[in-house]
Length: 554
Ligand SMILES: Cc1cc2nc3c(=O)[nH]c(=O)nc-3n(C[C@H](O)[C@H](O)[C@H](O)COP(=O)(O)OP(=O)(O)OC[C@H]3O[C@@H](n4cnc5c(N)ncnc54)[C@H](O)[C@@H]3O)c2cc1C
Image (cartoon, rainbow, N blue to C red; front, side):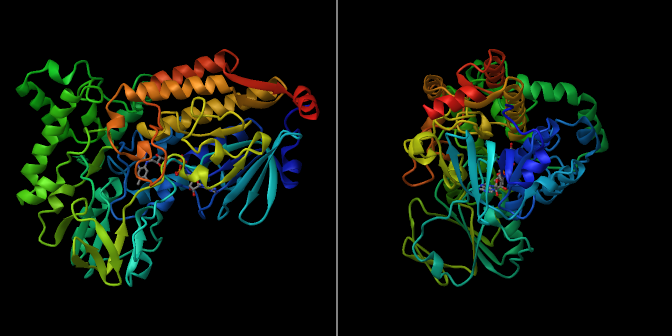
């Protein structure tokens, strides 16, 4: 008996699919494209009412990518990458959303996506070796595979601040921004949070608002984007060299970004030379500031040279010395929290209509109907912007009630922190895949590179199972334990765990402190995944259709 359906159309109509994919961001869209191309029947469920994921939800002023658009884009279709024109070095959110829509249209994806529908639960039936997936519209479908393309940064974190619900003005979360334009003209606005979304939105809101009060708990390092319109020549240079650029990003780069590879450590240079190198990267702008030397994530003394350089820049830009001091990060090594990329963030604090409030020294006591009370002072505002980030990496997975073998839930299994093999599967949950799951490079990389790698790997694996008459695939416990230990060891060989970051779950009260992404680099990680597949999916157990049925009966 074939493990997969012979007639996708009929079975799909009967609510039975080869695969259910949860989420229609860049991961879910490409997963659908690949599985469909292999002849599998697929149903995608998406909570939002259209495609785009991150770029559908995060419509706040100033939202744009921080990996350059010519690289933060799909590579699977050469026609697509040759024909799409990015307007700027870092495209703004509306343009990235337009791109996602273009991809959905070009590859006719929408016909297999059910929008405005949340996946509420997924239960593995050990007798049938299939998942039952129940959605917010009350329907249940079954599928051999469930693939979570739910996103690492898709579960917006609402802060638990006394009085928030009683605030009489409008409250916006950057990760759930309204679809209609928001105009802050003439208003007093408060922004709570100075991570990436706060840092992107502050300069734009400052230009509109009558007054902007920025509530900062932790100062973050930010590097200027130096965003500019792309010229035809720049676009052409990428297009002509895309084959090599994409290969390098996948196979050689640690973070999935094509850039010069550092050949020396920060302490190998003398002070003047080092400063020149930092100046050159600061002038170039962007994330590659952190790859000027090869030991900034490893050696605290080396890291201090980069951190001191940025702190000095902040002091040069920000006119008021006390404000500059507050904006200078001191709580963590540079780069150990996701480094931010900005357009005039620090300079925004030179405007007469912008005030910085240090809520580490003077925590927010409560929100009252007219404003925010912190350190015995009331800051009156008409609107509040919560730039408070996400329950990252596991938040959206945890919201789905997932029950695997022996009625054990994934939330029970992950109570002390996520456990996966390669960030792709978790023991006890057969045929359940994660795209950019914890234990994979994910958020430490150009995520489209990591998404494409996982999608291709999962698609190959599903095709392999079909070819070999396999019904289930499951991560072995010992392989998973070894991988979790490896992820942890690699992380603790770096400075990353020194920061209270969302990589560690530290932004969510009560969340276990585990360094979740794999820091070994995308090139090395890809090689490991490829080797595992080449060895017949070493560390996983695949079970043929008949054998798995007998095991379930006995
Ligand atoms: C503001 C911002 C800027 C970013 N900039 C960059 C960048 O420059 N470079 C980079 O590499 N990465 C960036 N990222 C990370 C970004 O999330 C990824 O690059 C990428 O878009 C993730 O795609 P995805 O499909 O995996 O997840 P998402 O885009 O998050 O999509 C997941 C989708 O799943 C849906 N979903 C979740 N749970 C359910 C459920 N139970 N039922 C139904 N649907 C569900 C969500 O509604 C969402 O639409 C940024 C993130 C943010 C928030």
